Image (cartoon, rainbow over all chains, first blue to last red; front, top):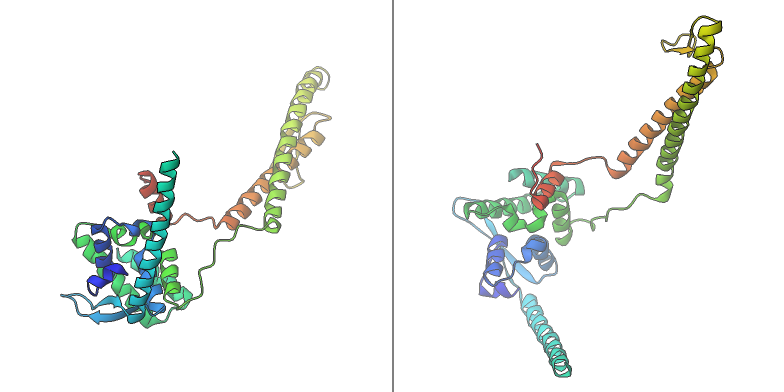
Length: 95
Length: 193
């Protein structure tokens, strides 16, 4: 969802953006079911955009509900990361 | 790569995905795969491991979009379904073992009686297994019973093992499709000819 904040994107372009950030989640599965779930839950908005010479592509962007979900997810992640960092620091001291 | 998209389409049709949605997903997939290939990559760059299992991929995507029921997990064969296979296999193995024992016993008796027959009777006789059977057993005076038992055990053993194999193949699906072969090649680097 975070990569969608860079602008509307389609499936393959999203995998390229993720890889550019060192995340290759596609190896474990496909991004399409994930996008399908986000669409079903109303977290993304879709738009058909004509492409050069090919059929129109489906572009995904965050909906207002998706932006809220992203912010909530970030807070949750930071909170979990801080807790884990604290636990690891404690372990270092004990060692 | 249209073969992959075709397989997905078949699965969506089987699952009852409405045509407009299936067409949309197929178009997106085709466009992305073509772009990956024009970038010098492959379908795996777009699909990951799903590139080797179009049916599962198509099912999970359709479910994620909310147009089908969740994909059913593969169910192991129930003990009740395994019973006949096990019974046929055990019967077949037991019959073949008994056949081997009968052959051993028969060959000992045969050599003993061959000597005695040559000395006192003058040679072997032959008998048909069944009145109209083309199978003829060479035997001596007290051998037909052993030979018939051995032949019957052989038939029971072969039929039992055969039925067990057939049932086992039906329970496991019994098919190795092109996607399983490709998955195997991708995982092991092996190439089947």
